[in-house]
Every structure is written in C-alpha cells, then in structure tokens.
Image (cartoon, rainbow, N blue to C red; front, side):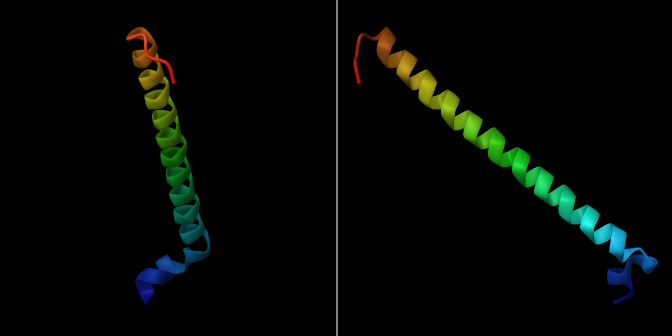
Length: 54
C-alpha cells in the first residue's frame, strides 16, 4: 500500500501517469489513422497507374 501512496506524492504521480498514458494512446491513434489513410491513398495511386478505375 505504501507503494501506491508514492511516499506522499501520489496526488501528483498518478495523474502524471494518467496524462502520459492518454498522450501515448492519442499519439498511437493519430499515427494509426494516418497510416491507414496513406495506405488507402497508395492503393488508389497503384490502381490509377495500372489504368483501373474505382
């Protein structure tokens, strides 16, 4: 239980962990969505280069 209290700094430490986790998850989601958009764009360009239409 002493570990969870972080030596009396739990009021600062746990919110910092939470903010870091939210930031990392947000960065992951933004990056993932960008990757998927670039993959769709790349597939469209490949189809256009081959002369296919969609």
